[in-house]
Amino acid sequence: MATIKLEYPVEIDKVKIDKLEMRRPKVRDQVAAKKASGSSDDLEIKLFANLCEVSPDVIEGMDMKDYVSLQREYKSFLS
Image (cartoon, rainbow, N blue to C red; front, side, top):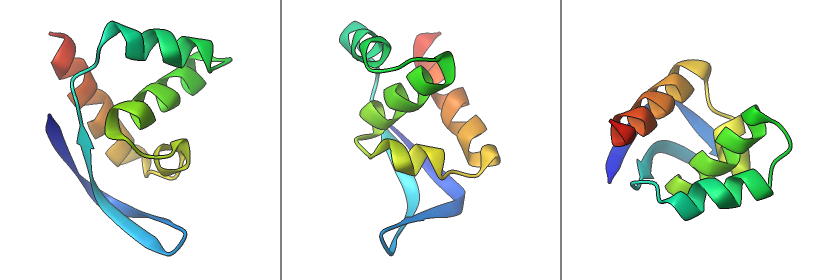
């Protein structure tokens, strides 16, 4: 499990999210994201939302700087 502190919090339904907890991915997470998505960008959003247990809206609402941090953390699980 990794904590990603957001430099630019996301606000969804008047709730401010300033950090995300990402769990280690399983093969089934990748398979589920592939089934539920159309593009590679959509796949990553659905995968990250699942791993962080948030709505895809939260991931889509992230500042790109924070999103890159999320991608980096995900890649660290794979190495």
